[in-house]
Length: 502
Image (tube, rainbow, N blue to C red; front, side, top):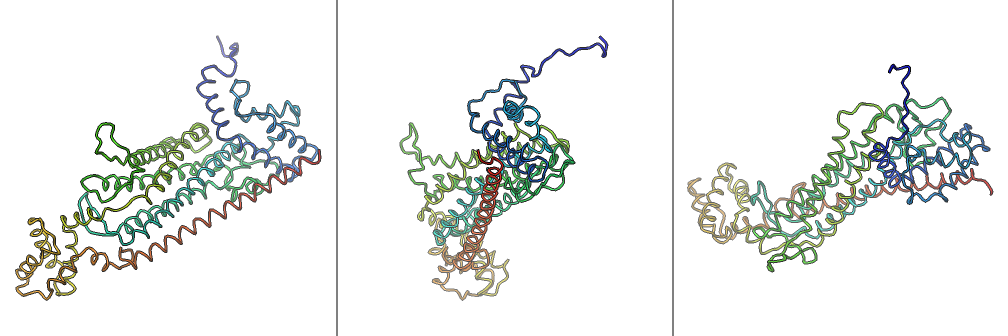
């Protein structure tokens, strides 16, 4: 059969295409983007009228029809039938039924499904980012409060899985908090990219109509329009920046969670988890399983995986309009917000409930001899030795104490005298009481009063700074919320004027 005589008798949609693609896309729009469609239709209609593209005689009946659709159509009960291609065309079909094809079709002047779709996705992401930011800030506030509460609580700090030096729990939590604040800054930067309106880009090159893109951005609660119209449709960095930030947040928090898993183990035991967060074994009555920590670990990993998958989906896609970045991918990505939110809620509840077991900390410090670094430092300052000489003396003391199973403060002075005289060929000026003070964990922390250190003054200064940073994030969130609330009120007022008296 030649091309000229070929007749295509197929009817859209193909049943398999309908079930594998169109129905899931329709259901995704129905579940996630109905309010976004509603706002875009209303804002676009207001803009078309206020720029003179539509007269009041044209705009008013469209406004009333949109209001009637909101009232009459129960979106939750809709099932995809294949009569229309997608949710956008369903709304247009409803408009045609009320207004006829000519008037109904005027709402779509100077816009495309392309700019509508990316605006929908940005509205959906903004709302989810804001909820995630609220949870992140709540966790940051919790970490700051607990760090302050535990600013004098000794713990063992580990490197390479081995006891390294004593510090305080507040210092450790402050390190987690400081990383979290940087992660919050990355998510705020991603939100700023999301907060730029694509509306007015139309298919990809804007329009010959005198549209007002600034007005559309304001009415929809965006901070401004995204400038380049090609980029409005083709650049998906609003997706990649968002999910890159999410991936890093939960990668970093997962490391904190892993420490909690290690520190609550029977062998380490420096962190105690209260009964409210402990499950018992079904067969072993002695076991206390801090299972929420495991759930946070796997949920954080799931969140990292979902966020990373979104980046993979965008990899090697063309710089143009494409389905890879649209409905089904967007819906898939929302799972990262859901699982990540659960981690943040659980962490914010668990961290204040944790306590440090001081007896286990003391025993682990004693057994590991981890205060000996300060002995070496003190020998440099008080005896005028080079650090290498002091390090060799301290190493010999720790070997002797550990071999005897002793306590460095109580049992290490004789070994110290011997090692000092052997290295320097003279007697030390440090007596037994001074030696015990030097190698105490309290002294170890207290003398580290440098910027960023664990000593009370340095740590208090750091926590005060973190609180200022958190307050600044709160202020920016409040400003954005107030601006968007004002935009919503402005849109409603202008749309109400279009409706007129009825």
